[in-house]
Length: 246
Image (cartoon, one colour):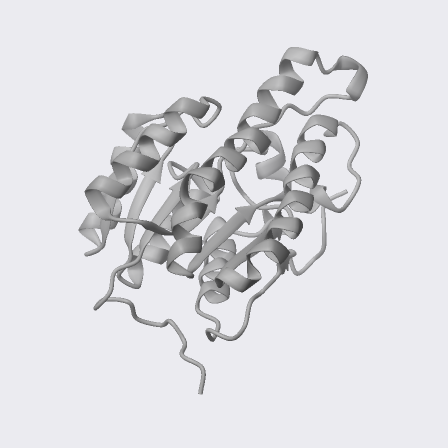
């Protein structure tokens, strides 16, 4: 019978979560900590990271703060090296950091495009580059890319965001095929509307009853990780029970 990862307290895998200070990233960090993983948290805000570390620690978990601007390639490799020295090799990478502007293509400046590409696409690629060689050598690893249903569905006013999420989705599909023989699982998570700060206060107020909770998305991610060893969830498409918000 294939082994299922429900309790990892004997061997504590190292999980690196980007965009871990709030929303889905924060909840994913808490979920992995709850089963005994060592969780490395990255985001720009030291104060917000400290809050997550404190919460996880109070719940009996192990979490550590590694502040990072994911748009800075050199910083990514430096932080990855620091995590390895302090905690060991990263076994689970969660690419969650992301930004956007909600504007029509004609109103979106090239500077805004480049900023979103740097955070949403180039940053995750650099994170993968930083940890994948060790995963391949050990023949074990998990890469979770927290994308969006915008990667596969058209929404007006989100050209830059959609381009980055669709781009990472395509790259990850290729990477999955290349890494199968190394036992590295690449899992793309495509959540629908989720009640996070990426939505405006007005939208969260008006559509809260139509949105998923970040914790629900995080629980689905953990469930995908806990599948038997001989199984991989390629794409995890998660939708609110009432459907998308158009």
